[in-house]
Image (tube, rainbow, N blue to C red; front, side):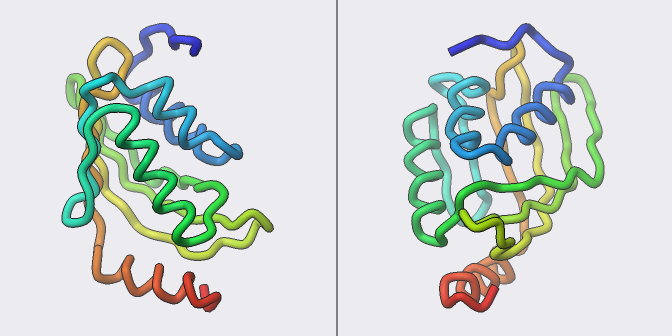
Amino acid sequence: MTTPSVLAPAETVTRFLAMWEAPGGLDQSVRDYFTATTVWENVGLARTTGVDEAIALNHQLMDSFGLATIKVDNLAVATTGSKVLTERIDHMVAADGRVLFSAPVMGIFEIADGKIAAWRDYFDSAGAAALMAGAGKGEG
C-alpha cells in the first residue's frame, strides 16, 4: 500500500471517490484511505468499522447487483475544517459498462491525517431499494 501524502480534506475525498471508477478501485480506495477504526455508515442500511468490514460490505453489494464499478459525479463539495460534504450522483456500473442505476447521495467525510476517520452517506433508502430491485431484475 502506498500511503498518500497528507492532502487537503476535499482533495482526499475527491481522490477516494475517483478511485471507484477503476475495476477493483472501491476496495483499493478503502485500503488506501481508511484506518483500522474508520466508521462507514450508509444511514438506515449498514454500518462498518475498519477496512475488512468495509470491503466485505462492498463485495456483498457488488455481488448482489452485478456491479463492477461506481462512477461518481460530484455535484458539490464543501469543506469546513476537517469535514467534507459531498452532493453527488453515484452511478452503479455493470461489467459491460451499462449503468444499472444511479443514486443521488449526500455524504459527510471526517478526515484526520489524510485518512477518512468517518464517513456517512444519506440517501433515499426506499428509492434506492426500488432502483436496486429493478436493477436486480435486469430492468435498470
